[in-house]
Length: 257
Ligand SMILES: [Zn+2]
Image (cartoon, rainbow, N blue to C red; front, top):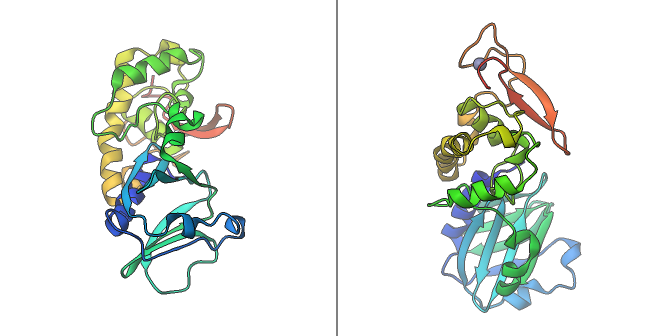
């Protein structure tokens, strides 16, 4: 599942193609857009900016219109050479010059007004973006303390209202880097410890947002049964589902407390 760094990376690439320009072509090949007339509604409007907040991506057009995208488990963005046949799973295509930004498989792709983005519950309720140039740490801590204190810290970090952009891989990697047990209840994790996780993650995720290579930061995610890269062997990385969604969580029981 794409996490915040992947979305920021996509935003950078799309920005290179479109920002400050009127797209040469906008197409919505997916049948669900049949009557929505996006190409007509966006015709002649320049893309003012392309930005991301957590896992949400926004293409802001002149005239108060915004395309909002969230990829969930299935969607993706690509920047391709223009002119070839678009992939069959294309929902949206925006071409300028010899390149095109292509959104595949949705599943959240909507055209909305700028003001609606400010009042939409999902968007207005997002926590501070872990990838923001300056992160509001006190707001992160306030949101964390408003949440259920019995929830494991790993699971609590996935809540986009607490902090936006962390997904399953970075949750495990952040807890490992800070040597904190992802199963420890959030109420027994100090402010300094919670911030340590975020501060370990930020430079890694920022680097990945620049080069699109989160895998080079992976030390324990998907490594169940292998020796701990910090203290093992004999310590082995373990995996177990966590939270309401039973998301796989990786940790070392011997050096994370
Ligand atoms: Zn270990």
